[in-house]
Image (cartoon, rainbow, N blue to C red; front, side, top):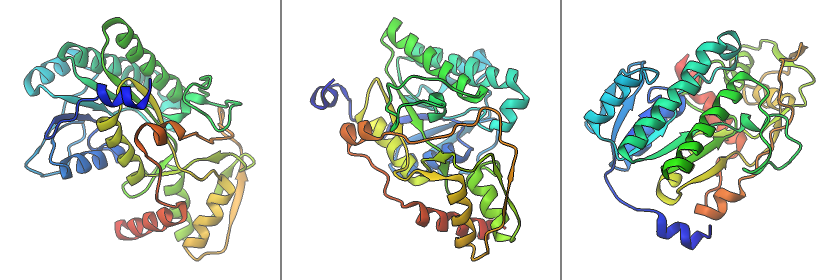
Length: 314
């Protein structure tokens, strides 16, 4: 599809009612803030209570794995658009609780897809670049072979397949967003940047899994949210990578964390994790071409911002 054709098919409107699942989480809460700043009405869906008190925000403690409860909520609030951000995203939890991960990430997503189909609304599904696994195609484009190495990536890919199946059957409008490794203020304690910075701040040893040569295309949270909003405004029925411009190894990350904390490097190598992805180099050419998106926050600057947030938090 050409950009001109895409533009004609996108309906631009203001003050939409947008439902966001996982609205209390790292990515979801930032998305809610951004949408509210754009004067949209936002419906937050999360089993964790939100601290947002904006008059245009309403929170519902609904578990989207409960299909009947979810359908009732959609009937009540009648959203115009849905962002499906909620998921089990902690890789360690997913390894320990694979059945629960399937229930939430696969069956829960199937429920969201059904609800959006019933109300004929756009579903923006937040997937992950983990669906590519240890691909041999670098930079990795959206049409690269999918070979997830962990249960988390497998369940997110299953969610994509469900959504694409509904689109093929019913013409249901969708977008699939595949973020690379996300970091920044509000990030979860289980994420590597959080762990590394916290240990570096205290002058503690940072554990490096395997060789430390594995790489990630870290994307700052504000850049990701900017891309997710552009997807709403400028994209339909597309699969889109949103990733950082810099490919950084785990060893480089450790050095940068000690440097920004003004500490001497002090790390040790430990046993590698099963299913380790060795190279994350994600192409963002499609996002650039579709809606002129590109990340603007340099990793070193984003790391400093994250450290400032951690210092205030602690």
